Length: 71
View 1 (tube, rainbow, N blue to C red):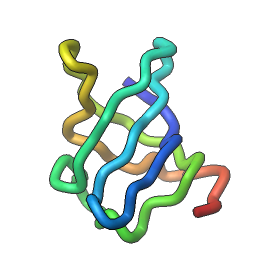
View 2: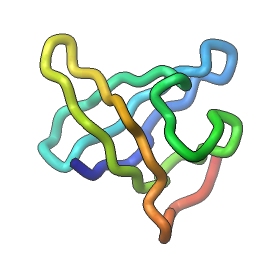
View 3: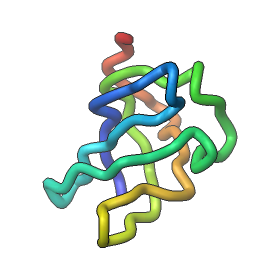
View 4: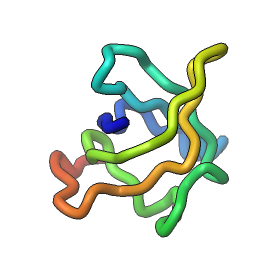
């Protein structure tokens, strides 16, 4: 699934992703593949594997044309 990073909590290395399905998925920095938490930006597009209850994102990868870079 694809989505955009909507929240970053630096001191917890956590955040959330708005999925293309309209659901907000929480994530932890350990779910990132090929990047680090400090390299993330609000609005950046990602792909991820969703899980339902509670909504969580796993196997998160940045999309090559990451857009909307602000922190």
